[in-house]
Image (tube, rainbow, N blue to C red; front, top):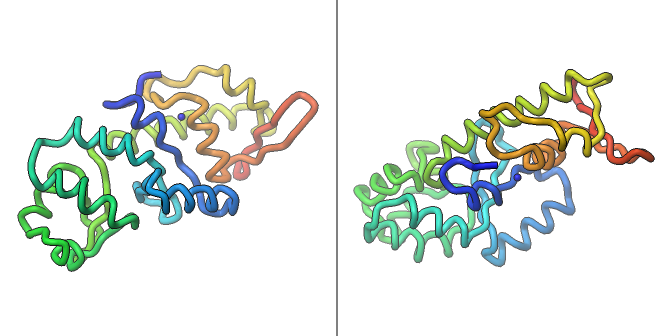
Length: 199
């Protein structure tokens, strides 16, 4: 979901989805409430979220962030308490984070500016992940568009080789496109057929 950028386990377990699928939303909400996963809003699609396992997120942060008290506070005090994809500056201040500490979290890649009064939660190398992810998605979409009627059997697509810039793997992008409703799944006697919803 091949070698991943920076941390194979972390990126390999991230999943892209749209909340239009009610069953997927129900499972995601349950896992989020239990603290098993965290959601991140990355990129330009307002309805698009990245789901990351919480334990892998913590390991990723420990590996890629400097050892500072504010990072430890972020992991121990902020992550468990705030499950939203963003946070207001006022809440950060109420939780005891100074302006300097907020700036440290931004530099560490744990927060990105959402507005003058709020931040998005993020993670180190999120930009690299998004660039790799988008290149891979475009590569797979091009592959399907080249097929007759812009459709292909899933098992055939899984055998296709991706461009070198697409490092997340074919299966990752297939599940991403199904979740994002970029392809329609049609069951046939030969297997699952993937058809582009927009040609």
